[in-house]
Image 1 (cartoon, rainbow, N blue to C red):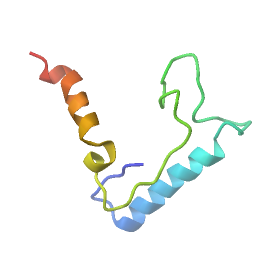
Image 2 (cartoon, one colour):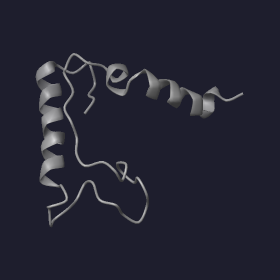
Image 3 (cartoon, one colour):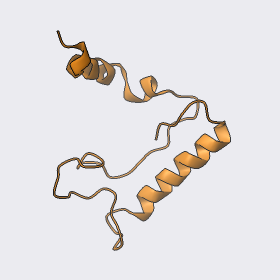
Image 4 (spheres, rainbow, N blue to C red):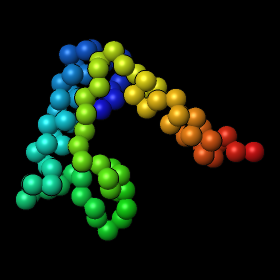
Length: 83
């Protein structure tokens, strides 16, 4: 879970915890709703291979979380960067 760095650390932790808890409550064992369920469309909300959410350290940023390889690959396929 990556949150807005402008939020207070307490608010960021509350938001990340809420999302992480939701991923546990609405897992494959839930009869009400499943966040990580393969539906009619592939990768609709999350990748079909996703099984849950993880809280990253509050002092990390999206570049640290995603990693250099992912960021470079995403820049390579960004239509705005195509010539």
